[in-house]
Image 1 (tube, rainbow, N blue to C red):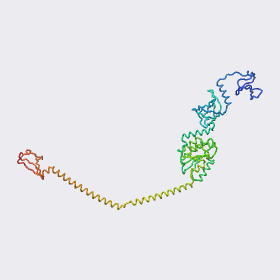
Image 2: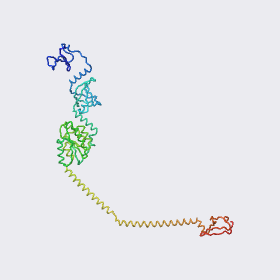
Image 3: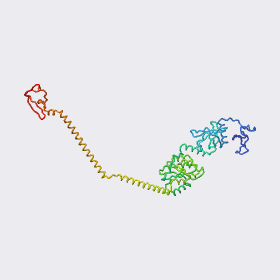
Image 4: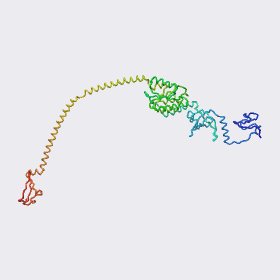
Length: 441
């Protein structure tokens, strides 16, 4: 039975358990590698490793030795797969290393990596056993020389500017006297107290709707965006104030988030951004219809004081009265001018009667002339017709002889016999005769 020490490989070193020590104590007897002192060589047996075993051993050594490291270099060949994991190469002048950012970690990267950018990464070295390649698994990355948040914000600004989020032409004017004012801020902060105090002093009976939110922290951006969307559902809300008091860049960062910018852009009603102090400038300020330095300034701008409205209405009243008086004076002058040109209806009626008489006289003359001319024409036509009429011929002493009983006109003596009765038509009257004698012409 072998009573010698048993040897183990730990991190590349060979060590043994010696009975004279506690079972938890291990005695290192050999140097790193496969070589040991000759006096112990007989305890080590030759072993042949498979590729997988060797790769796994190398992986365990690398992951133990380089568990978390910081690395800098230039990104190249950056791509995102359909699964959401991103793969790239990080390199410098002398070497390169493959890197991977898993989908679950991409949300922690505050900017969009791309080829050519110099970055600082944090992660662990591991081996992708299927290919036998070692790689850096990244859980944090930022551009060198500028914070990841700030770099990501600059990228977001460029993207939103390209989409027209900052165009001055799309920004709307504020209503003169809103029916209700929506407010998105913390219910316990100084901002809401300042807004309420100023509105109470300037216009005490104006309607307010507060959507309470966190104004800093992880959930703040989502709550602010939800508050803007919710207040847009109320038809009587005419303007929305989004803001908070001053603070550090980290405190105000929720108002630099894309979700807040897009909610402001899509708002149905004008949005006033009142974040921090005058020196603070956030993405919400750039997208909003109006940016003011403080929440107090927002309350001052969103509604005029009652005194200002009173003065304004008094001025309008004076201008309206003056305009009405001027208009009435102009109409009086026009009325007098029309009155002078107006003719007495009775005199106008007499003129019309006289004109009617003249027309009747001319009409009578015209009718008489027309009748006389027509009568003359009729007589001439009658004379011509009489000249052509058989009765006219009879009037000159001629007559028409006709046989009886057929009353056919007799043109020749041969057409009748002696003793036959005939009818003779005269100019006036008729004769019934008997033929006693006839001659041939």
